[in-house]
Length: 535
Image 1 (cartoon, rainbow, N blue to C red):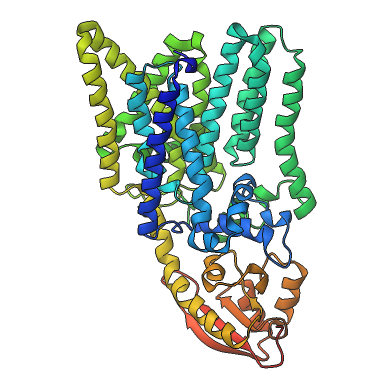
Image 2: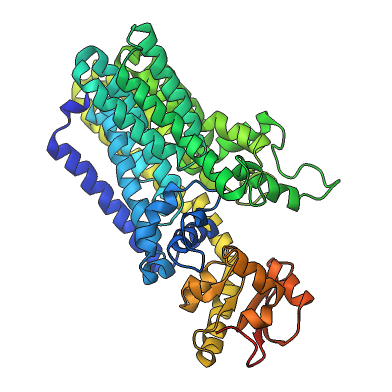
């Protein structure tokens, strides 16, 4: 079965159904005030906004740790202040990515499966409540899922074109390049995807004695250039080729700062690939299935992958194994990359990075589709007229599974709730105070570190250029040396750079409020003496 067999009506039906699901999830998140739950989602939008707005606006504000494409895609939408403040800016690219992922997955499924098996597999993926929630936020998972799915689509079609339609192979090479470069600039597992996928393409051409293809070598230069550009950017802007991996804001630096000597391993799986793999795969299972089915999920997925590889290799199924790349990548990352995963069922019984498991969802969907195909084939051998009712039953089973995941409270949504609960008291209390103080000092500058609580600025209703923050280079340094003369208002959190500056230079500053939240540093708001501060 090839995607050429997909009718226009079938494509539109899939897209319309998934669009309805996406819209429903967006309305639900809006109604439940959940668009801004994740601190990382808020930070992604703030990074995009500071490229456009601030004393030191420009592409250097993209930072060095997170890759730039998600922020570049957010920029047109965060330029609308209200969309930045209410979270709609993050919804637009994520929801479009969700639709692209669903369309790509169905196209991929139909290369190997009949509609009776492809539809239940798509329902398993598209109805997943964790994915539906994340596509209402500015998180990067929906975008990367679309990229990994479409890379497999184009690799699969390229391999088939070598035998069936060589005239189309060059176009497919460049389509694959476009997706791989996007993946490289979205998440670091995209680097592994690009390396393995492109190396496999080269091996195939070598075996076919077609490695002299000019298009392949030009495209190879583009693929190699993508990570090199990021390394050069880090070197030019931050002085270190690997600033994203070992700089002051890297995961390694954060782990080093928060780990106490003699306290034992900082997290489960630390320097232990086996335990890391267990945590990642358990998280992936729980993101995808109801808890009492989770142990069967991996077995079914392996069975589907093995069956597909044995029976569909001649139809380029081997490329679908790229969907499994997140498994070894995150096993290594948890063990040695300072990115822990916490799930509530295992120590330390918490929620942290539970969204990483979502990256296995396409692999699970494809493999379950293959299992469904085998079941339907067996039923058809016994009683042909039972195939359609059985397909409907499988689709309903996929719906029921996702309903159970929802009833059991999706991990990613609960993590978002825990995240926002820690920030909400400060986000509720500080912006009204700032608005009141700024009403008496129109245009006054606010000295504060904005990366920890970005919403304080957006909720106050002022542009980033009315703040002096850590992205402002020399202006930030000068303000820390003399806060009262550089800013009208100072917001300091216990232990941060601003608090240290106030402690060192308290002259002409008066505290007007202190705000506390459980588990968070206490914030103190100061005003400078009249006549001393910048306006």
